[in-house]
Every structure is written in structure tokens, then in C-alpha cells.
Length: 114
Length: 112
Image (cartoon, rainbow over all chains, first blue to last red; front, side, top):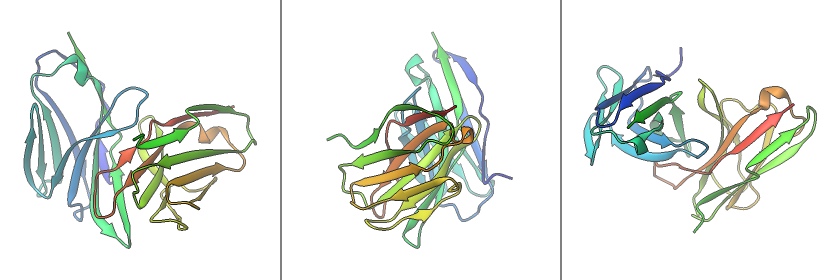
């Protein structure tokens, strides 16, 4: 079983829709939860970062972490064609022995069509 | 300020050939990582470095070697390329005490 599970999609939605992206995980030591966005043929870039449980909002994006269920979500409101990308969740237990081990999900490909 | 720069961006190798991928950063970050990205597999860690002169194995190190002689550079070597090493390779850096990783643009490698 992978430490982090993420549905690869693809997910296709009309412009203006609310998008929900999710990941589940098995390691209860994870404390840091991130969402990266990766455009085609580009490197991933950090979109949202959450420490421990709770919600975090940034513009049209909301990240939620439910540690009791080992489940994290990213919501995109009023989705735009420019949101079309692959979204990767990533998790970490923090620095240990000088090393921060980031575990990534497989990524969900999202297409927002006009 | 270029951030994280990977060289080359594309390469086609024949089985058995060798090559070196270069990652250069100008952010003075301590930690550097090499990942490979394959369809359905996400990003998998190959090797990493916690500082100049140090390297360590990640999740999938076989067939690769690394060196970090200077803080700003992290090299990934393939001594004898195999088709299974066809992938997109990403370098990432991380400042000390932080969890935000900064990625390069990637190197698309095809081994035929």
C-alpha cells in the first residue's frame, strides 16, 4: 500500500465549477500537508501549505486537513481554464536527521473547459 | 535570480551510455533532492543532500550516483543507462527549517 493515495483522474469540469481534489494517507506521523500545481512540461510549484489539521483559504483555493480520517482536500471555487494542470498532494513528518522526507501523491490531472 | 536550473532540458541516450544531469541553485538552500516522475507513480526520491559534501540514498537510488562538491550544484549521474530510466527528472531545493520545496523545470530523458 502506498503511503499517499491520489486519484489520477483525469477530471474535466466546465468553467466556473467547484473542483474537489483529495488524497488519503496512512502515516499518522505526517504533520505538514501541501498541494503543488504542475503545468504541462513544467516543474511543480507550491500552491497551498497547511500544518496539522484545519482549513486554510487563499483566494479561490481552500485546503482542508482531517487527520482523524487521514484525508486532505483541495477545493477550487469558480474554476478557470488557467487552473488546468496536474495537482499533487505532498506530505511530510518534518525534519528528521537533517532530512525532510516529502511523500507525493501520483497527481490528479484537471482540465477546465470554457 | 534564476532559482533552480536544470541542464539539459531534453536528452536521448542509447542503452549503456552515460550522462550527468546538473542542478544549479542560487537560493543558498542547504537541502537538494533529485526526483523522477513517471505516469501514475508521482515523484519518487532518487538521492538527496543535506549540505555540501553530503549525499544519501532515497527511495529509488539503483543505477544512479550523485555528487555535491559545491553547495549550489547537485549532479545526478547515470553510469550505464537503461530503458527503465526513461523518465522526467526533477531537482528540488529546500531551505533549512522549511517545508516548501522549489523545483527546477525538469529534464526529459529517453533511453532507447
